[in-house]
Image (cartoon, rainbow, N blue to C red; front, side, top):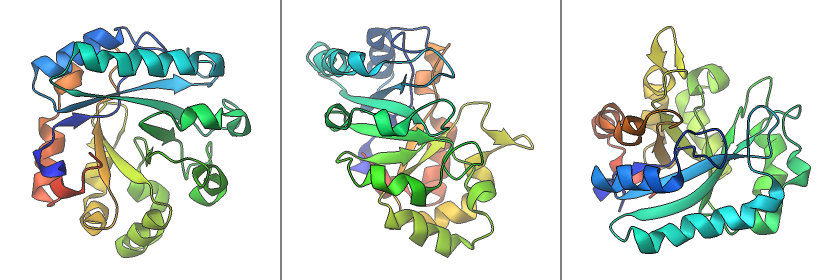
Length: 227
C-alpha cells in the first residue's frame, strides 16, 4: 500500500496554531492528488495555541466527518503531543479519546527538553493507534549508536519515524533526515516511516512532497510508509 500512496501526516489547522481550516487543508491535498492527508493539531501543550482535552472528541468527529465531503482522499485524524514536561502533562492525556484517533505524533523524543522512548513506553503501551516520532534529528539524538542498533531500538517500541520537510528541522543547512540517511537505510523492513510538512502558514506546503519522496525512492523505503 505504501508504494502507491502519497501522504502528508503533519499539518496544523485553526484547531491549534495553523492559519487554515481542516477543509482548506484537505481540499489542497485532494486537488494535488495526495492519497492520504493527516491533520495533527497540537494537543494540551503550553508552548502554543492547542487543543484542550475537552475539545478532542469534537475535533475527531469534525475530521472524520470530512471523509464524506472529500471521498477522493483518505482523511486521517491525528494529534501532535509535546513530550516536554514543562509544556505538557503526559499523565493527564485522555487515553480513551486518544485511541479514537488514527495516529499520534510525539515531538522532542530523546531530546534534553523532552523524554526518552524508555520513559514514554508506559504511555505507548496504552495507546492502540500508530505512534510516530515527529521531526526527530535521528543522527543527533541516537547518533552514539550505530544505525543497525538504532533501527532495532526504535523498532522495539513499534513507532514510526517522520521525514519532515519543514524549514526549521535542519542542522547546518541540511534536513535532519538527509543527515541521517544511513540510519534510514537500516530502517528498511524494520521501522515504518511517514512524511510530513508541518503545515502552518502556506497551503503549498500541503503538497510540497517531491524531495521527501525522492529520498524514499532512493533508499527503497516506499513500501515502509506507515500508510
